[in-house]
Length: 201
Image 1 (cartoon, rainbow, N blue to C red):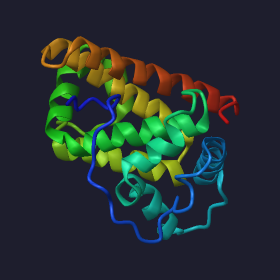
Image 2 (image 1 turned 30 degrees about the vertical axis):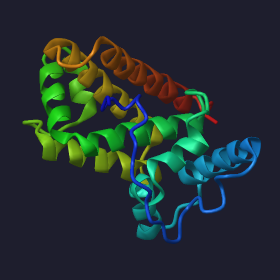
Image 3 (image 1 turned 135 degrees about the horizontal axis):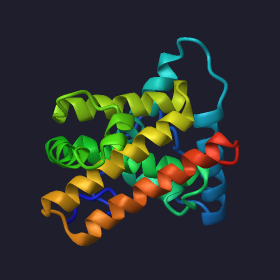
């Protein structure tokens, strides 16, 4: 099985308490899609209270508490140029990084020499090891709630671009895995441009 973020990894069922999407799955697909779009809007555009650490923690741990399959059910069918589709790609990428920090760090190191500008934008601490890429992922997930969402998307797009470049350089990923990572980078960058114009919905 590929560990590329574009491949749907299989996870054991997650025991969920007070789940964010408790009533959303198993319903009519159109209703699930509509509810997923509403949830995406609430997560990114919702009213924020200073110090709302409970909400921030839920967003950061969403893929863990809900299970990636649940997020896939509600968001993976959404277009890449939508808010719901963009969140799906963010959680897919960050979940993959959390599961493969050593490989990700290796690919990032291999790619940043060629994609230097993108490496700077990605903002991974130097030297980029497993701990550093995990810190970057945590910052991205926090940024969904309390950061500039344009910056979140621009940063993750740059990160994915560097990783794709590193994959091509190292040659240990398949061509399809490298292409999918590059496509993910392009989709996130396109979403950041839409968000900067207030057109990501």
